Length: 67
Image 1 (cartoon, rainbow, N blue to C red):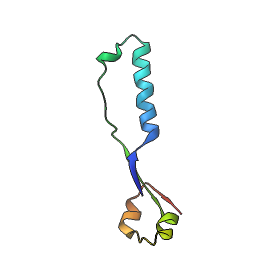
Image 2 (tube, rainbow, N blue to C red):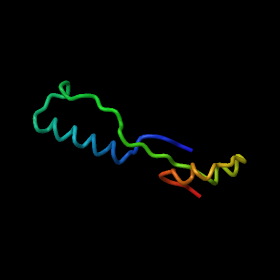
Image 3 (cartoon, helix red, strand yellow):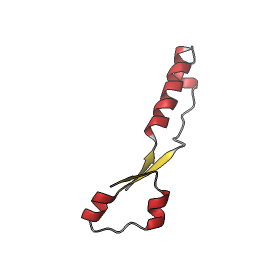
């Protein structure tokens, strides 16, 4: 099970920063931002190997389930 930042969203934000810098903004003037989109990924194969039972409501809310 993993809960972390959504990488495509992070790359999009990084590209926007690069665009601002290339247009003349000073990097020191740009604010530091935190991720705003997170993903919950559950690996059922690993959970079964560890003999863990994942509740159904958690599986339903997961962004991705690896079987």
